[in-house]
Length: 314
Image (cartoon, rainbow, N blue to C red; front, side):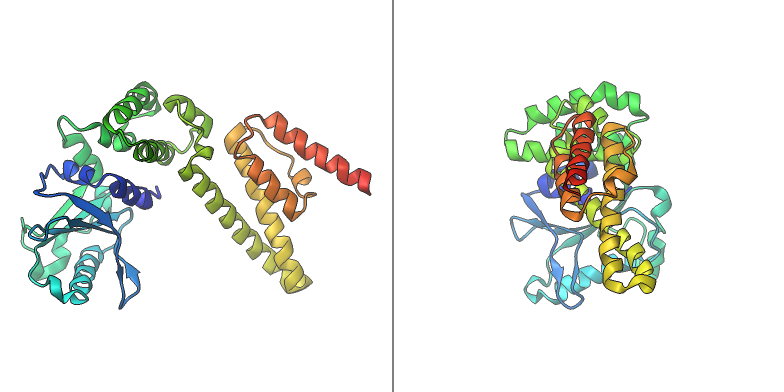
């Protein structure tokens, strides 16, 4: 699951949710950011900065794969942060590493003599364990509930309640929408075989392809498809010419990706040969129509109509 980005967006919207997961009651308000470490040009995954200077900084790392150097990298980045901010010398700090699975934790003993069991500066947990341990959790944590759902049936039964509780708990409509978008996306990540229409129906929300998160995923997918197509085209370009290969590769990437998007949204298989007859501008127009067209029939009719016009022009 590619959920790291979702967690950071979630904690940015609701930094207090992290403290609730850890069952910590902070002594002041915190805001979430991802500062850049100038020397290495690397961005810290997450930093919870206290509103009042006498309270500790919390450095956050969400780990979704096995990295035997994760503990050392965390310590290293914290060191860079303080080296570039000498005015913060002496300020208290703590490190939090949240693993998506126990198998991704190489163990704090990898720090050697720096590690001491129960050391107060380091907190390490598996997110799913934390969710199960929190008693009387606030509705904001409902966003993460799909991660511990046993199966699709549980999500179908509970999702309406999750949504209603989030709406009741958060008055800010902008924040409310971002939280509900993230809830939908966590369901996508946990149950990848569910179609977007099924998830929208469960949550009774705006279709996910019309949300900010959904549109970002679509654009990201289109870019990936174009890159893959360019790679294919470049390979052919070695024989047919670089420029021709790049253009053909972009087109291939677009129509292959659009075919996959149509399958995901409507559960229908589109004729690849038809899409292959569309030019770059027409493929982009088709991609835009997928964001708002609810019926596969309308998409198929548009494609057939455009091809008929091209044939008449010839």
